[in-house]
Image 1 (tube, rainbow, N blue to C red):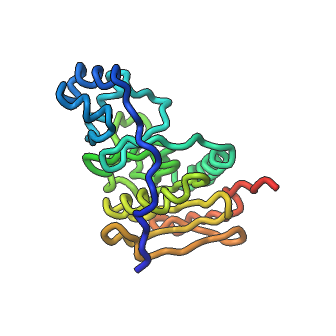
Image 2: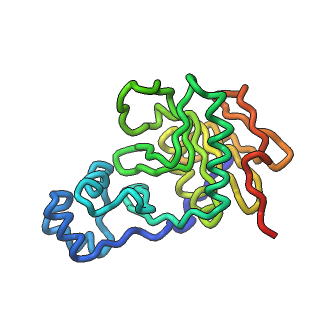
Image 3: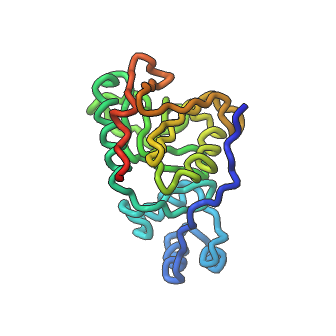
Length: 226
């Protein structure tokens, strides 16, 4: 079995000022006695508390943060290659999957009560247009998650990948933008994936759930600047 390292340092945790900690207490997200713990960065949060921060105006939709194992982490800015890879992949996946799967872009997936990442691309259970809100996707809804990695490669292939495996995400692609290759992980077992294969420019890749959908790696892997 191929292991996924969880020893890689997490991205920095989102810090809270004294004023924000007081606002957390006023909103009922934390107890008044927990303000010092939150200020020191020792307070872990649930998904419901994390969502409540948005309602209270403490976190905003454009904040680059994700909740992993109770920690609100700050994600690095999205670079041009990251944007290009996500856009091109979406363009390639949507037409053959209409009526079969929904292609979600940078949307949340509620893995458990303390983790809600926002993967770059997620193929999830099909929802017909106009059928109404369906809530956040859960692992049972997800066929495939795709993460485009540049500066975040160590995290995407380490702690984040381990969390996806532990919560039963059936398949994850980590696209290494610098090496121009995609590693596909399948068959989750514990916090690891037993099935691992790397695809490079010149090869094609297909989601396990939709083997008829074939993507050339070169079609969605932006070139590296010389």
